[in-house]
Image (cartoon, rainbow, N blue to C red; front, side, top):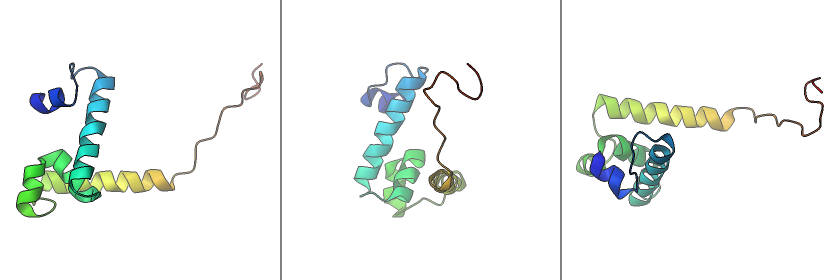
Length: 97
C-alpha cells in the first residue's frame, strides 16, 4: 500500500533494497504490536492488523491462512537446514589457482 510504504521510508517501491527494508520494518512493527506472536504478525503483514484484531487471531481468509502456514514452514525448514559452507580465503579454492 502506498501510504504504508511511505510511512516506512520507501520512496521507490520498485527498488528491491527499499522494498526489503520496508517489509522488514513493517514485520517488526507487527511483531511488536502483537507481542511477538509470529502467526498474528504474519497474518497482519498479509491481511492488515485490523483484520487480525477483528477476528482475534489469524483471519478466516484462505489466502492469509495459507500465507501464515507457508511462511512458518519455510522458516522451520530454514532453521533446520545444514549451515552453508564457507569459501576458503586461500589462493587455491576447489582446485583452482
